[in-house]
Amino acid sequence: MKRRGMALLMTLTILLVLSLALTKSFEDRALEQRHLSASLAQFQLENLARSVVRGLIQAFRVHGFWEVTRSKQGLALIPAGAVVPLGEAGISDISITSLDHLFNLKNRFKPLSVQAKVFDKTLTSIYAARQTQSFGVNPEEVMSALNDFQDPDSDPDEYFPYGAEQYPQAHPAFKVKNAPFDLLSEVKVLPAFALLGLSQKELEDHFRVSGPLESRLDVNMAKPEEIAAFLDQWSGLGEPYQNLERLKAPLLEILSQKDKNGFQPFFDEPFVSRGNSVFEQELEARGLMGQISAAELDLFSGVTKLALIRFTLHQGPRTKRVRVLVEFSYAIKLPGKRLPKATGAVIHEMQIY
Image (cartoon, rainbow, N blue to C red; front, side, top):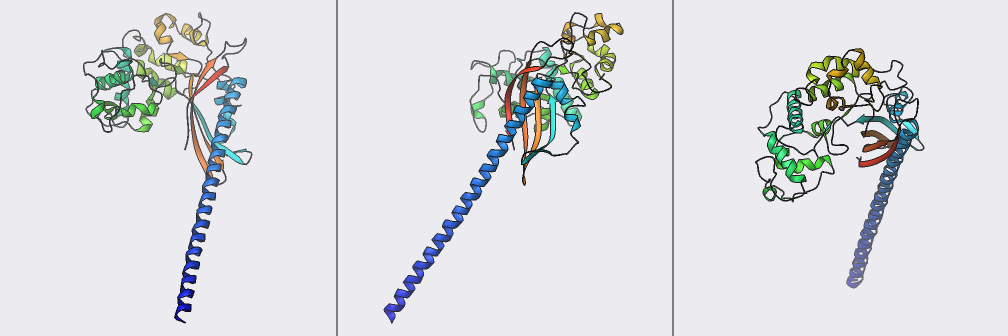
């Protein structure tokens, strides 16, 4: 009886172990299936996001960038918050913003240069907007760090006397890139830049590292308050922008104009064209044509080169925000058209989160 009882106990123990093993196996398989299902859903959303971006770029090529983004016959037809069906998925909250007016941190900084002055003014405006003081960081130290990180050598920056940043002493330590920035987030690696205490939103609202080095404002896309802020940023810098301070009011009045019906852009491109452009005619009508420098005229544009595209994707219970940075190139405009159509597009950055 004793042996029979021991055998029964051993059998029960083995069955229990097998039962636990099978249960664990089923749990692992269920977990794996959930993981595969989640991975498939993520893949489908990412694939859909890329398809939406390709579709928008194609629409810009066929219909025109302004016509899609600002015309009353374009995206403005979609009610705010509405989810547009895309097969079994949907898209909402589409926004397309011009970033050409933001300051490009790839600029080479020199003492008392226009770039240095604009960078300093930009920081001042950021702190003024949140009514706080800076953290005691000398902007020249930040400019020196930006120069030193991007230049093609390992020597200290030649324009500012702060020497090379002590990257080996940073936490964590890192090597100097000696190449231009690829992503805006890279600037946060620099200890001097990090000490500025800028939030991610402040960074994205005022700076960029993609697109042309020069800052230009697409006035067909800009709101009056954005035009006013841009004029403030570039006023009071001295030559070759010595007239903006005096002409700020009439320029704001001219550049804020829009087509009353909302069916076409008000300004054309090229923005300045031997006195034949809309902008030059507006200046001439006010007797201002000879009072503004070529550099000041070059601050304004009728088209967007660098755009930020944002939208939300919906698929079942899952939603994802998509953020895409696209740089456009343009063909010569057709007769009778105010703006050329975008013919090329380079995607600099795409985030799905």
